[in-house]
Length: 270
Image 1 (cartoon, rainbow, N blue to C red):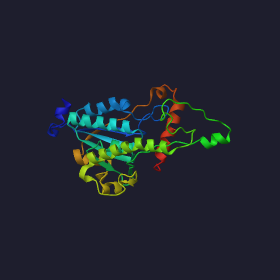
Image 2 (image 1 turned 90 degrees about the horizontal axis):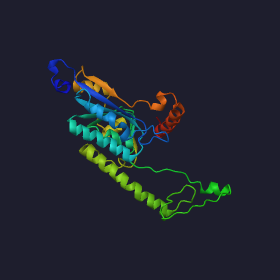
Image 3 (image 1 turned 30 degrees about the vertical axis):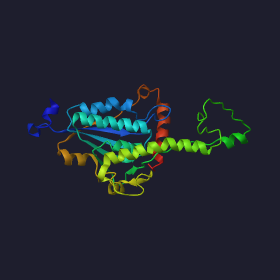
Image 4 (image 1 turned 45 degrees about the vertical axis):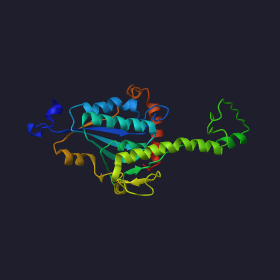
């Protein structure tokens, strides 16, 4: 009933916009599982689209990225529910929407940023360490037996080979291509023809607007008031703290997960 009445402002019911906060690393979030995953966020996203008969859903993104698969799944869920409910989605970027974080932002029909937000990083990274030399100096011999020649791909305790690198590139380049295709599909003709657009480069909010990665510099409350009137009611939906933390038994795990998340944000100076 509220959803029906909210479409008739003369009846005195203020329009409602549900605000979904997507903050942190995307994926497992380290060994303690504090990051954003589709499975963990599904109930929250469903409530944001269904509760209270909203006129629209706003997503607030502050993420340095993470798992490309989870980024795709979360964004796809938002788009599916937007279609099912016939609701517009407005994305607002806070500090960072980079890599998978930008993938999430593209779930919005429009994207708004702060002038100093960091946006983009449309690329794929695979990182690790090579410890073969260290083991040799320590007099340690690595013994590894596999069935399947590619089973020990880029083992950190063995010297890197050209074949390993070629196989890794064969994995990450199709992921990059899928990311580019997704951005082109969502942003369409709004994208500028710029040589660094899909190189993994990061842009300030103002530059992102010039490149078509975002639609304008605007903040959540004033922009939604412009769109839905001064009386618009905003209802926030965010992830609750983990059950271990609520019981007081997971403070150390939460702290270590926070350090890992802090390191991910630090790549962008935030």
